[in-house]
Structure formats: structure tokens, C-alpha cells
Length: 151
Image (spheres, rainbow, N blue to C red):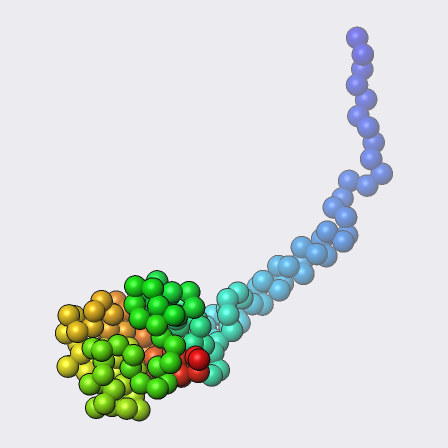
């Protein structure tokens, strides 16, 4: 019969560096949690809070404009959005452009003009000032400003 003798170790404790690291993580997490009880700390991840106007590209992606107007906004199911700085390119919007030459695009995207809020006149274009497609007036203005820069 063989007798098993336990192997003796010189040190059976947790290494000091591991204890120090664990302590640092616990202290940092506790400090973050403790100071965030009031809800004033920024989130750990995600984009930083916006300090300026909304980014038109992000709004266009959020609204899904490219599904109808194409990836480069030159038209697909919906009309081409280039050259809108010169006025409406769609026949159903000519009167709106005449009545509101400076802000027809904002009115059209928002869907706030009673004359063009009829779904038949909108030709499938959602009214983005109303749920479920809700965009803020600032987001709509950002998109319109961007569209006016397209060649």
C-alpha cells in the first residue's frame, strides 16, 4: 500500500497583486455607484450627450428615409431628394412650394399642412411630426438643411 504524502507549498495565500486589483475594482465600482445614486453621472457606454443640432445622417437613418429614397437619396420608390433647394420636384408638391417657398420641405416632412396631410396626396410619405414616426422639429430642420446642400 502506498502512502500519499501531501505536497507542501511555500505560500498558500492569494497573491498580493490579485488582492490589490480586486480591492481597486470594488472601490471604483462602489464610488461610481455611490455617486450615481442621484442619477447625475453620464452613462458608462453609448454616445455622449448632444451639444448641437441633430446630425442629419443619423436622423435620416433613424427615420428610414433610405428605404424609399434610396441609399444616396436619388430616388427609389420615393422621389429623388437632390435639387430640393430649388423647390419641390414632385408635381403633388408644386402648390405647397408656391405657397411656402422657404419652409415647404419642413411642412412636407412634418406632414403639418392640411392640404397635403391627406394620405392620397402624401403618396405613402409618413407624417414625421406624428407618432409612430415622430421626429422633433429640430431633427426635421436638420434633415431639410442637409437636403438643401445636396447637388
